[in-house]
Amino acid sequence: MRVKLKFIAKVTVAHFVTYFICGMLFSRLFDYETLFELGNAKYFMRDFYGVSSLLGPFVQIIRGMLIGCILLVLKDTLLKEKGAGLKLWLVFAGLGIICAPSAAPVSIEGVVYTQLPLEFHLRGAPEILVQTLLFSLWAAHDFKPKSKWKVSGQIKIAAIVTAVSGVGFSLGGVLLALVLKIDITEGTSDPFAFLVMLAAMIIVFLTTAWYLRRGKERRFTIVYYLVCYFAIAILPAAYNYLSDSALKSPLSLVLSGWPVIVIGAYLSKQTF
Image (cartoon, rainbow, N blue to C red):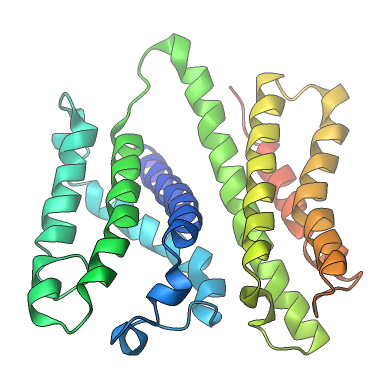
């Protein structure tokens, strides 16, 4: 059971991280804001800056856990074969995307039976294909050699910490909006706010990886948590003030800083 839970956790982290990064990257490259308003797509997709954008991180954790549970069926068969990552991706790309049984975007059924513009399918395909490829390679990769286990373990822990930070970042914004009694979607109307979030997650990941490589030495502990707090709480608060956002408030330093406590509790139980 412990092995299965670890596998599900690994898949969940792989899905969350790749989905978040690819979503941030491709939504800017292919201008999803205008894409969602293209032709009949505006009746098919929710508002790009709607509440769904805030709920995204929470939904992806649930999806990742479900995908992990499903992949348990392939854990000791397909995922043990040579080239397992590419084979798993072919399953996702072939059955889950291109030949999806429903009339979904990017699928053959979607192109034939929906009124979505062809451009919508073509501009949406790169993110889906790249994300599932990166996810498949990550989920199927098994660091067996002992010389690599320590490094892989550190990367996994750093990814989990980054995922916690991402959820905390989003939840902090929601809580702040509720406390200030402003529109909960206020923060989603600013595309640069997402870039600040991405920068914060990168800082947390790199700093955590560095801290773990140092063996969590006490002399670096205070520095590590200060950097995490800076990325998760101070950075977005400073941006809100500089951009004169409706979310600017000293309360954000408190409401956005709670993930640091969760990170501390989690790391205190991790050994190598």
